[in-house]
Image (cartoon, rainbow, N blue to C red; front, side):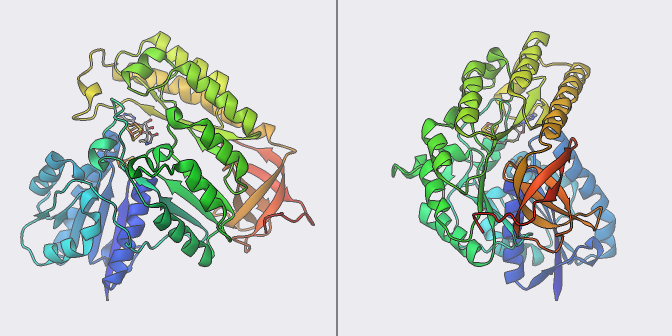
Amino acid sequence: MKNYRIITFGCQMNEHDAEKMRGMLEQMGYSETGDMEEADLLLINTCCVRETAENKVYGLLGRLRKLKEKKPGLIIGVGGCMTQVEETARHIKRRYPYVNLVFGTGGLHRLPELIAGAAGSRETVLDHCRPEGVFEGIPAKRESGLKAWVPVIYGCDNFCTYCIVPRVRGRERSRRPGDIIREIKELAEKGYKEVTLLGQNVNSYGRDLGENYGFADLLRDADRIEGIERIRFMTSHPRDFTDRLISAIKDTAKVCEHFHIPVQSGSNRILKAMNRGYSREYYLDLIEKIRKEIPGAAITSDIMVGFPGETWEDFLDTMDLVERVRYDAAFTFVYNRRRGTPAERMPGQVPEEEKTRRIEALIKRQNEISLEKNVEEAGKVHQVLIEGVSRTNRDLAGGRTRTNKMVFLPGRGEDAGKTVYVKIVGGSLTHLEGEELNGVKCPCV
Ligand code: SAH
Ligand code: SF4
Ligand code: F3S
C-alpha cells in the first residue's frame, strides 16, 4: 500500500483541485497520510497570486531535499497555479532537481499518467499545457461530509491589471448545467447539506455556453434539489451582480444571505487603472440595493492597498468606502507586482513602508467595524448548521449562520449536520456565541 500527502496553498479553487487529486490518487490505489515522512508521493498544490504564497512553496521545496535524501523512492510533484507559469516551472525543475514532476492547472486531469511517467523517469518530468476545456467525471474526495465546493466556471476573462489568475487559470469555461445539477444531487444523496458554487467570477457563468442560461437560472435549479439546505457562491464580480441575480436570490429559499463582493479600491481613478469596470458610486448603489432587497445580508470583500499610482487621497477614498459599506469582514492585501501583468510596469509603484502604513490603518478600522457588527448581533436569532465540536472547547458545538458567521453554543457537538435556531448572546471579532432556542424547529428540516 502506497501513501500520499497533498499540501495545498491558495484559494478555494485550489482546495477543490486538491479534492480531485485525492480522488484520482485513491483510484490509483494510494491512501492518504497526514505524516510527510510516511508518504511515498508528495504533491504540492501551489498559488502565485502574491509573492508570499510563492515564497512558502520555495521554502517547503528547500526543506524537502533532506526528506528525499532519506527516502530516495519518494515522488515529489509540484502542480497548481505557480507552475502553470512556464518560466517558474522551468526554474523549479532546474533549482530543485529532486522534484520528479512539475505540472500546472492545465494538466490536472492527466495526473495519474503524469505520476506514472514521473515514477519511471530519472529526470524531472515537466508537463506544460494550457488550461483549456472542462473535464467531467474526475472523482473528488472531499474533506467534509457536510459542505462541498462545486465548481461552476473555470478561468477568468476579466484581466484586472494586477492579477495573474487569468494567465494561470485560462479563459472562462462554464460547466454544463446538467453536470452541475447532477453533481449537487449526488452530494445531496450522500448527505451533504451545503454547497458553495465556485468560480473566479460566478456571475459570468453560462455566457460562453450561448444558451441563454445564466447564474441566476443555475441558482433557481439548484434550489430545487431536495436534501441540500444551503447554497452559497463565490466570488462575485460587482459589475456582473445583476438585478436578475438579485431577484433569483430573493426567490430561492436555500441561497444564503452572505455575499462576497470584492471592491478592491474605493477610488474611481484606481478602479479604472485596475480595469475593474465599475465606479465607487455604482458599487455603493449595488450594496444598498442588495441590503434593501435581501434584509440582513452579510457582505464581505477583498480590498487592496498600494496599487501603482495610489495616492493618500485614493487610499482615503477606500477608507471612506469601508466606512460607508460597513463590511462584515474583509480580506485585505498589499499590492504585489506579478510578472506579465499590466500593473507590473505601471509608473508610481508605492514604496513598501507606505503600503504597510496603509494596510495597517485599513485592517485596524475594518477590525473595529467587524467587531461592532458582531456585537450588534446579540439578541438576534439565527439558523445555525452544526458542523461539530469546537476544536478548543469540547463542550461547545460550532456551526455557521446563513450569513456565514461562526457561532459557538453549548452542547450539540455530536449533532453535526443538524440545523438549529440559536439566540446570539455575544460577539467577538471572529465569531458569535449563542444558546439554542429549545423547541423551535427549523422549517427546512
Ligand atoms: N476571482 C476572485 C479572486 C481573485 S484572487 C476575485 O476577483 O475576487 C483573490 C484576491 O487577491 C483578489 O480579490 C485581490 O484582492 C487579491 N490579489 C490579486 N492579485 C493581487 C496582487 N497582484 N497583489 C495583491 N493582491 C492581489
Ligand atoms: Fe483576478 Fe480580476 Fe479575474 Fe478576480 S476577476 S481572478 S481579480 S482578473
Ligand atoms: Fe492562487 Fe490560483 Fe487561487 S493563483 S488565488 S490558487 S486561482
